[in-house]
Image (tube, rainbow, N blue to C red):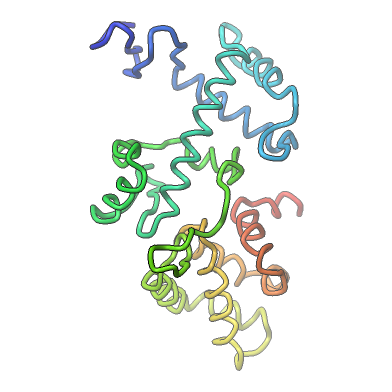
Length: 263
């Protein structure tokens, strides 16, 4: 590892900058930690807004098993890495809740135009360098941390005193409606699911409206959720029957595949 710039900064063989007094993780080590964290989630180690007591020691043991030569330990290495990841995840989720801001799951980059990003930076000055950084683990962080670190589902009142949905304004909602209207295959599936055609338009509008009111779900996720609901009569009925505060959680679990695991 060679020093670059400040005497307190070093660069690893992979080009990652680290403070000299901090452990610089390799891409392999980070990937294994992500894998083990996801395994803990699957095994029920999630508790409240974090994990059950003892999870750090469990992670250390799993890392040693998968990487026998590692010197990574629960404290300070693993705890510090998870704390940093949660902080980054919290920041990204808040940014992605802003109007006109999305995430490109192929490039792993924040996706927005210059005007939208200018508003983000005005609101979150520390985010100025985040737009062109690849966030390779965001999908994994969503699975591991969920929305635990983000409080509130709706943006606060704006300067005019009117509340608006966090992820969708009027124009985006119109776009969602138009996209869903073009999903003729899904519409035909809904006809088969509900058994009649006379209320298809009403049902479609209800689903579009309900999805459009979910502030922390992206446009692509809304489209996926619409298609998944349309393909399954039982899930469509449950979604329509759930109270408002339950629907977003149901959709998030549906998108995560939780119900496929239940059979």
